[in-house]
Length: 111
Image (cartoon, rainbow, N blue to C red):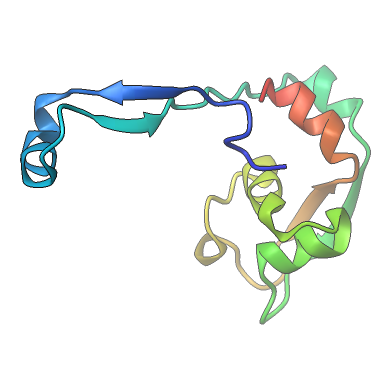
């Protein structure tokens, strides 16, 4: 499941993008609307079963997503859940919590 699966396409006619729009000969750019992700409360997190993973040299979010969800595109769930937006933010020895039921976490996030 793509994180853009339920996103609406919008026409962005912002002045910020006007050089790009003019260069391409368009009236506006079509973009996915920004998804607002809900940060679960403590009681919501307690309902989500997780597995612990100790980050080691060579680990990648997409490999963890493949191992746990059979879909490397769901790497962002692990990154978001642990508050580490990129792999560069994770240090060797950090313990990550991997939500086991990605459908449940997507529901909690409101995506």
